[in-house]
Amino acid sequence: PKPAAPEKLPSGLRYPYSTIDNTQDFLKFTIFKYKRSGVITRDSNSLKADLIGNIILPIPASLADSNNADWGQSNMNFMQAAGVQLGSDMMEGKMEDAGKGVNSMVAKLKGNPLVKQYFAAQAVNSIAGNIGVDQVTARQSGQVINPNMELLFKGPALRTFTYQFKFTPRFQKEAQTVRTIIKAFKRSMAPEGSGQAMLKTPKVFEIQYLGKAQDYLNRIKLCALKSCGVNYTGDGTWATYNDGAPISMTMDLSFTELTPVYAEDYKGYNDSSDGVGF
Image 1 (cartoon, rainbow, N blue to C red):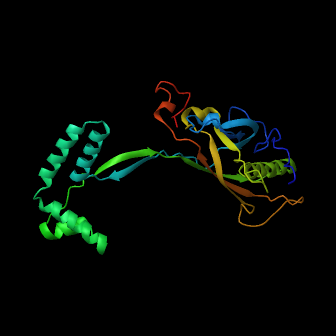
Image 2 (image 1 turned 90 degrees about the vertical axis):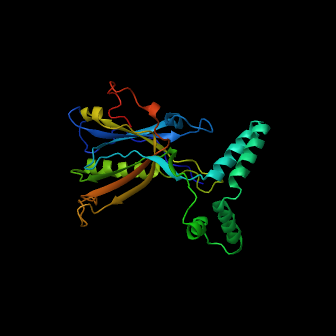
Image 3 (image 1 turned 180 degrees about the horizontal axis):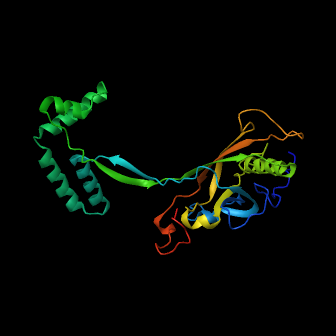
């Protein structure tokens, strides 16, 4: 296979193509090679290796973040709870307690009509299927086995960030820079290894705010670029400059963080260095 073109980005990739100063707010995208440092990753910063370059773009018209946690409904009836306790006693070698638990469970189950209906429904399901235990118990006794329903924490959730940038280059150098910026995002999200047995993970992105507003905005962990969409008719019609550069383009980017956010990632409430946190 042919060798890839040089990876390093040209310096000064920014839009608009003017001097960056502290009176304006920008987004800085820094691109790194991806590396693995272990089977389990506790800090996303450990996943970045060589610096490829950075791109500076203006704060988009829509800027938002959303934090989520994965909680799910969980049920455990009295027979399942007893089985868990029995298994726990056996695993801990408490055979005497396990025996007492079995005797106690049998005593509770003996003669209980709900239990009979429960096992009757299980038997029918093994033959015909599609008959719920609660259907049987509700029809026969007007009762259902208490599921002891709870909402339980299942794990953290990875966050996604989407941005839309509009480019209306005013002169040739700015149009050429926009072209390079679009190519840089597209190339960095592509894997390496065409025609080889294994593919290399694409580049990863560090996203930071520049400007005074950063003290009041969220922080973002290392991200993967999952989608990049470009519309070359940003104003709804095809129009170009004399050299063929489109006069208006929009670019939509969707990033997902590589690792979840944990409480330990936040600094103290009197520390504004992480803005509103993550």
